[in-house]
Length: 182
Image (cartoon, rainbow, N blue to C red):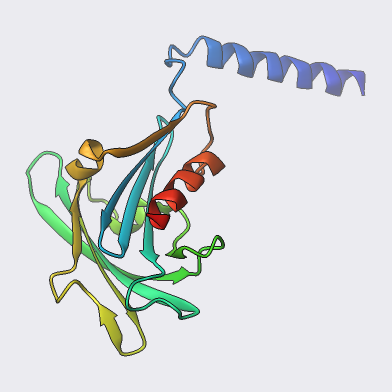
């Protein structure tokens, strides 16, 4: 037992020393939420030095409001780092009711869900159309579209300075929900 505890203590001290000596800045794990709203569509990114997530929401006052859940067709266009080649991927995702009653919202989605395997690209544009059964809300067939640069220039930004892990922290979720209420 003493041997096990000494190995555990050595492992913990080594891990702490490695983090301190890693030369990462102190704000490396701070999470920044950026929100862009297009009518009833709410799109948010949450980024830190260790994670990048996408959140898609739909306000409850949209034409699809009042249903138990809705779906969304998400189209993401990525640009290859070296050649500039563009690749577009579509996925259909479920949006359950957001538990504060503001509408519908996904959990944190990974960008890699929308980038083809083996494609070394940077997300450039997100387009979303929502539906429930036969009824659609697609911004009059133009889709709700956001360029990735718009997230960085958005006035709706919040940084959680308590550090974070690989998932979206509660203060960032609260900020996104507050933007849905507007």
